[in-house]
Image 1 (tube, rainbow, N blue to C red):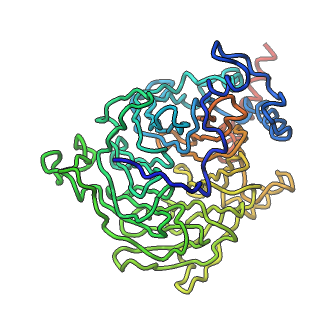
Image 2 (image 1 turned 30 degrees about the vertical axis):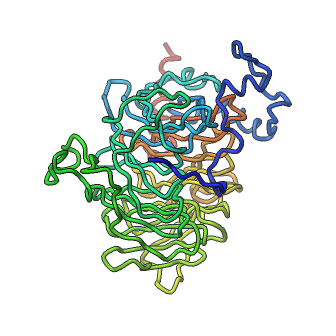
Image 3 (image 1 turned 180 degrees about the vertical axis):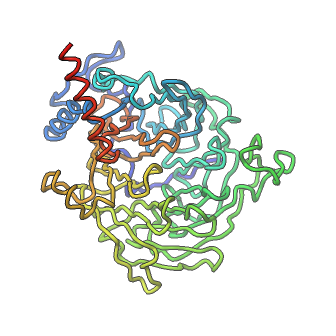
Length: 494
């Protein structure tokens, strides 16, 4: 399949002039074709933002205090998406897990979908010295490339199938959604002129490019997409599966592959849903249903759909924000709550019980803590009231809506701290284009940023976990600290 490239720039997410590999940047900066030259931080040629660098330096000093574990991985090429895959091994001190990311090249090499093996250090294992002393220009030993897929076009969005995390969907600059069985795909070498890898399934239905809006259903192997044609499209992966490849009576988890097409024709949609008046930027399933879902777009609307009722909106919230909506997520632990993130720098939390079909629906709360467009929002799998948001300002904020209006919590914070904000990850020095909570390792996050001009590479991938003293119950934390204090006093006596 050939991707149909767009002639128009994306409205968000595309790295800003950073589609050069680390080696190319070293050549451009005077390194020539020989060995890589040392990079002097803060040099005029790098056009550093002094304030951002000062903020980053302050954050780095606090890493041993704020984090239980952090791994910093300098990317060769920019990546627009990152996702956790299945757990491979459980050890005493580490967990081995798949990690999906991409490489967006400058066309001197093929664009790729990368399958990596990642070692996740378990809580309270990493030493203070270990997490504090990382090299921004180095690649982490905890992230190792396992397989490369030569992707037709750049990868804008990756989503894994909950029923079988070896199956992933990708969006590129074309109308189709591509489905990959990463275990059955051959490993390829990324060399110029190499033939592109062939997806296991191609989902058709959009009439224009679908670049970002992509979701996989937790309840059934369904796929949801939105695009520049202003539509939301729904597919079932199993609508076009060879009976020779799999028994449809078996679960997706027990089959060797659920995406072996009976022939080479693309898979058609279950439904096409019309209601947006501009590009659909993000979509999300209701966690317990393959027929209910929501979408947001550049028309500033949040729309709720129900495929059992028809192809028109069930609820349409006009002007959910004061600008384009970039992202949406549906709470898996309390299905009444939906998050939206916007170019107006805010995150809104809506209660679907208070939305009406005439478009009236005020958010339960508006979270104001970013200074630039919000690109990604996601509920935490570890606590129903916690979520993260990342933005063009280089920050990944962790919020808890139960702390909104909490007088005791407010008294312990700076007056300028936004309501509900309880942790701020400032380890990226440019826009954080994507992040993903790890459902298998509590409070662990992977995040990726387009800070290639700062990092001396294609961008930064970070795996991190805040220290548990920040989110555990206050009484429990105080008791532990008191025990530690008592222990130190006893040791001093001896």
